[in-house]
Amino acid sequence: MEVISKGEVIEEYPKDKPFSSCLMFKVVKGKPFHIVVSLDEQNQKGCIITAYEPTLDKFESDFKTRRR
Image (cartoon, rainbow, N blue to C red; front, side):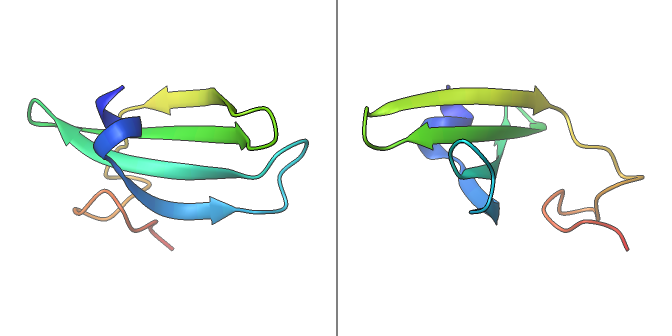
């Protein structure tokens, strides 16, 4: 919940269906976390699509930038 309430949006996916979504980031208790969330603004409901600890094989050391 801390990632959703205090985290930073690091990627946006406006074309996702049925609702746009975004990737959020926050360090919680010393560990980096990513959560992909979708928001149904009309009905004011959100959905957690996935939550995970990012790894350095896919993200730079800031855990916000994807490796190319």
